[in-house]
Length: 112
Image 1: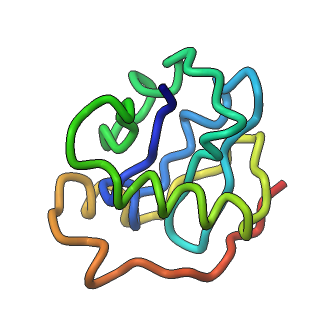
Image 2: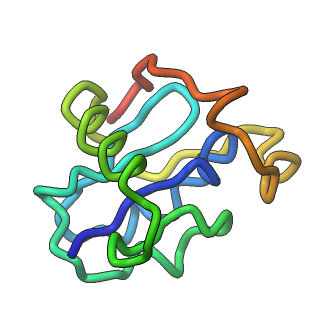
């Protein structure tokens, strides 16, 4: 088992999860984070820290797309281990559905 970040993170990118991860398996894109599934130790401490409820265990059904996205982009984006401020409009995007199709960016973030 591993955890994956879903589209609920897009445009929210709160980063509370980054601070609690004991193995630093988060990677930063322009407008979301992903988890490297081969680095994740399945501890689960990140899941309850996410205000957007964007982190789910891969044992939940229908997450194959997100597992692939997390795997792909964690290999391309920079590692992030320190929490920074969320985007100013993050709360406006929290709970919005369909963000992947309209707002996903494959561009990397700044990382640490």
